[in-house]
Length: 582
Image (cartoon, rainbow, N blue to C red; front, side, top):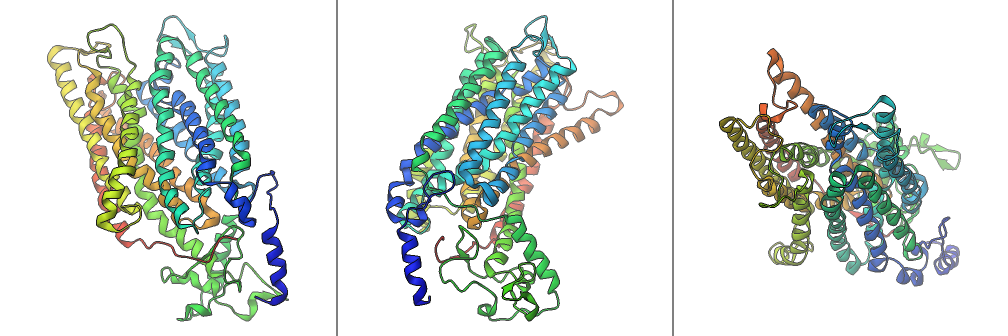
């Protein structure tokens, strides 16, 4: 560093640095750093997530039955529409993440998309309660919706899907931003944050799958959607309440532009030879920071050496006194692209797991809806969708067990600060996810055998308790604690600093593709198994079908997916950072 530069840098460090939205950017001032972030800021973020998830699951847990009973759709159509909408909710985060990383920052993105979310929830409530907008019913489940009423429902749902796009990829990353990676104590607490973040999700889901589902089926869909709308409004209030305590990282510019620049520069220099000495590759002179706002430098790796050509400096790379970014990239830019490429195979293995998880809001509900939904010998009935409460209870049970028991025990044997690596954690979850499908298939096999033996084909609820579904829900909850929380932490840690929202969105997109995969699989199975006038595996009355075959198919796919994951995870190389954040 030149001596003339030292006073300027020292003065900058002593200033109060504020973002455009008025919140403190803690990186510029150590005093502000101590007054913001860490667990002080997290209750507002966790409260926001808890209420937002209550709103989301309160609306989505029973949506497949709303499509079937209120919009008068068949089982297959209702399941596909539910999967397509759910998939979109996990695909729009790519848009929100891009805006957060490139231009708005996570704070503004969460704030603005939350408003869209509330508007969508309000419209959905109106579509289920306002005469003229709500379906016409001659009985509890004998309803018909015209084109306009159906359109109003789906416009509301896809506004909600857009609203989730700015929240899902940013909230977990924003919470993790409150802990400094360069502080060992805070970095350790960040690992616990992801566990408790997922815990807060499931507290919201617990209320949704119990209280709200019961309200929808026993009080009315207007109230059933209205309460989640109020919960979403509370989520927004919780988020804004912590504004002065948040740490904010400034957006680093378009990550897609930087990736494309590396690709273009590499292709332009395809004839250039990459030097063996990595120190000869182009990088900024600053020993601490990269040229990307809010990003540390990344150390060079030897994989995908073709892209290193973009960092080889030749005479034509400069325009007058500045470099041409479309001809010359820094090592950190190149390593950003390599990091994304390394993430993609791990990302792909999450798709099948997401398809398994999707069964809770689709075929597990439709399966349970044909069983005895009474609690014991009483007349009180529990909606089939409320069985997802046991998934939530499983998560609430396993998160503290994992965080307080399994991690300390595993740490003694592995020496790893988190007990297990994130890759090991996800692998365990993928293994566990095979068993809920086996449970569901065996249960359906026994149920169908009872239907045939006692001629229960036309029964609305056959005399077999819905609580036999509890094991499959509980096992999915255990798989979630390992896989989904592992994914959250893995994609945050392995993402380049200025691409964390985008990589969180990439993680969430596995849920989107899992939903779409499930929809495609249902379409293929329905088309293939209904030939020659056969009822197929998934007819409108599942008592005539073979839903167990569908569960076995998913179980086989899950086994193959686990095998692929084990091979891919052995190949994976963790990223290495250099220096500190700007």
